[in-house]
Amino acid sequence: MKHVISLAMLLFALLGWVFFQPMPADGLSQGPLPSVYDPGITLNQAIKKTPDKPILLEVYVDWCGYCQKATPILNTVSKTYGDRLTFVMMNAERTDNSKILNQFRVRGYPSVYFIDTNHRLLYKIPNHYVLDSTMLAAELERLTSQ
Figure 1 (tube, rainbow, N blue to C red):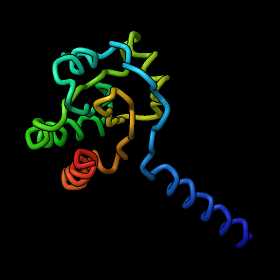
Figure 2: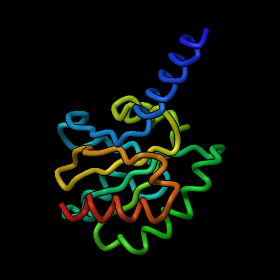
Figure 3: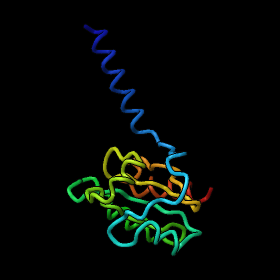
């Protein structure tokens, strides 16, 4: 019985470790992304308006408590990094966003992605970074200085 409990705890710890690791997203998108973003500016409009800036895309839903906690953090961080990044928000509950949700393999909310100036999805920012302004700022500093 002790071995079963130990094995279950090890499996639980391993799964937790896997899901909290940064997830590189190489190869998910090879070209410009479709314009299926809402509200506000679409991703393609953001690319045309600021082609020399990477994009931080937040995928959210209105009913998500973590999304509601992340929004003021992202707003604060956008004031610091707005000159280096374009911030775009996408509501995952809109049916016209389903194609991009599948392409980005969205598994939960909020999901925040870093898209480079070549319009490729490079990186999914871990959720625990998004909910901590200090960690998020450090991660954005790292991503924008590459």
